Image (cartoon, rainbow, N blue to C red; front, top):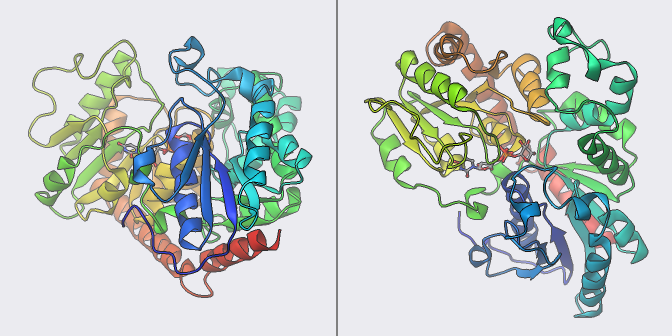
Length: 455
Ligand code: UDX
């Protein structure tokens, strides 16, 4: 997989893409951009200075920095969605800057017109800007269809009082969504429909429905029933394309990936290693960190653990771990080439925070999961993967060493794990088949391109 994909045709059309500036949002947007480039479109990427993409990896794209933000500005010092640029997201201060930039771009290269704007679903204010310029806007939704359906039902769930239930109700089923338990809903991290995060989700849903179409990082065979519901509730076309099947997300990694892990994996037996990573934003406290470390060692299975600097609140990196850690069987790194690790034959399972990119990358490589969601969409995706698709085990009660080593052995050693691994292998094959001519993902990509050429 090179950085510059082959392109044989030219549509003489430009596409402008605007990713939300976090790793889990930048990766799928740049995968989509590369895919569209390979299909003959010229690519312009709008980006913020905060978490600016690795421009040197994409010499075939035009990059334009907008929203004059300053990485030293204290608004950007916390890496949570809510702390990021509230003025841009909630008060729409970014709209004027974006409109001016788009006006300039639309006036350029008249022989190569702009087909459409593609923005992350979280940039909801971009819909009114696009409308004012008569520019079609497509939305890239970087999470699952399932979690988006639940998010669109937050007002209903709030009306029914779910967000204020006390701990005695945690294990109860949510009657409106029988797959879910009350604790899954509470883990989203909102207290009411009026929370800033709930308002962001509500605006996201509203402006996604007002867009010209939705691109999902998924495939029909993974979320078939959910697709029917989305088509019913969202009055625009949906295009499901599993990006990890086409391109690696490693190209757009903001952190340097430790490539030596591949050599380390080469020395391990087939399907023997548990890969552990909790994404680009999640954090644990020191007690949880130690429980994870003990759970890993007690499982007696080889493991490769990504501990991102900043993962442990109040620590720089590994200083709270005992000296003898990780022992003979373990390896700890700061950041890994995740998709390549998942594709390696030594990788036997993935203990994940159930971020949607990680989940889909795992499914696309046929790797079984242990799910430890933190917040947002993750608890919904964890439940879906463990109880609906049944390709993972849900660690439901936080980080406790006995439960952790038990779950690792269930997936890596026990009969149950063999069945889970077989199911995820079959799912991977379905993803492979969906890419072939007449397959669902192939058709989806072709219709997206026809649609973009029709504007
Ligand atoms: C978050 C949400 O959890 C996710 O559901 C939402 O859709 C986007 O924002 P994040 O927490 O970063 O994302 O997790 P995830 O969606 O899994 O994305 C992480 C990305 O970083 C993946 O593409 C993964 O391959 C990459 N990664 C992770 C690395 O390249 N190296 C690592 O060591 C760990």
